Image 1 (cartoon, rainbow, N blue to C red):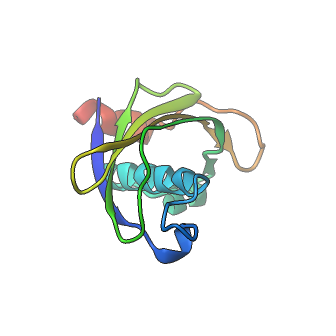
Image 2: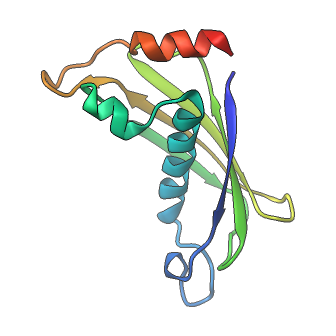
Length: 133
């Protein structure tokens, strides 16, 4: 399935006094990975929202293997798990610049019509783009 690699430099404000990334910040790194995954397909969250689609996270699972530190460059590998339906599932791996595995994670998001606030099927434009790869 389609995968992307996103590099992120850990900022000082994302760490505790020991220079270790605060655990809650990993969810933001996953979001950045997803955002870049969509962008690689030619879409953005902003564009999808302007076209009546929201993508709320309904499930998040993170397994922490080792810490990331201030000023590390981490790479988020974002992989689509399967062709989307009313939901879209991603798997992630995060590595530091020494190629050490820091985190594995999964998320499930659902497609919601922003006008009706009801679940909807994955948009055709997304499915068509995935067929090209």
